[in-house]
Length: 174
Image (cartoon, rainbow, N blue to C red):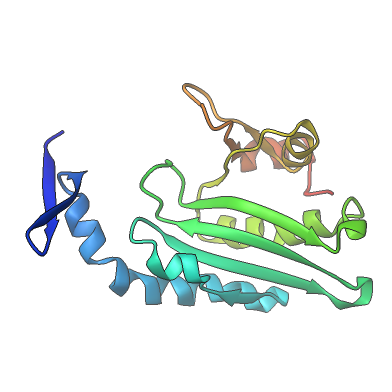
């Protein structure tokens, strides 16, 4: 693949694959449309924001989705990437945290994940969870219909297999 040298003020910034320049130039235009799409999660009670790091990320569309569970005194924060060029999925879950910590393991993460998966499935999006290295985390993801990505997988990514999850009767759990 041919690489294109990008410059700023006459000095070289980095090289990027041919064809990537178009995607980078259009990321701002796509960000608003993607933000509107992710804001559909508000129907499940979520708050959707663009984190500061996402505003500077020119390689993907980054969003923070927070599901408040007020009755339980907790919230689940999920960081998503859309159209990430490094992963062959439409939606990439990069981080997921339930706070406060003493509320972990009681089912809130599974409930929040189900909202994300229902939304993604309604749009026929592929979903991937990246860098799942902890055995307890891997169990959470596999219990919720994810499977280890096949082939070269140095970051230990898991992909959602809707057909496998529904045919086995699995539904998202904590």
